Image 1 (tube, helix red, strand yellow):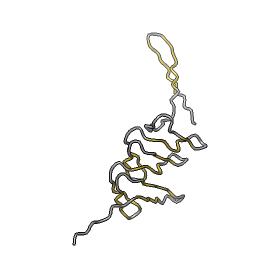
Image 2 (cartoon, helix red, strand yellow):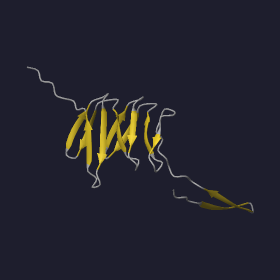
Image 3 (tube, helix red, strand yellow):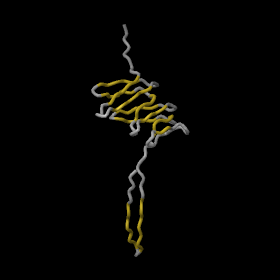
Amino acid sequence: MKLYIVATLVFASGIFGINLTLPQPAQASIPCENGTSSNHNNGSLSSCTLRVDMNASLNNNVYYCKQASTISFDDEGRFTSCVLSTSVQLRNGNDLKICEADYPVYVSVAEDGTQSISCHEKTARMNY
């Protein structure tokens, strides 16, 4: 964790003062149910049960995650899975997938940045 110190000198009405600010790094806020969180060895969030519906983003895709389902992240804090609260169209390389609501979606990113998405896809219905 990097620590930054910001010092400000104040000259007002002959009063000299120093204002020190110690800002903390921004932390993503995940709305987890109490007692459901688990962490990776490095302390980052591994998974928890969502208290409310939540949107997670990764590589220009937005995943609409369902309340009371488990959301998971890799050890670098990247989103990896959840149960979708609504059907969603996702870009996977040059392909588009339509993943159905109420089913899990799994996302992984390879070392070269290639993203892989696995989900329950909507199928076209044909009328005969």
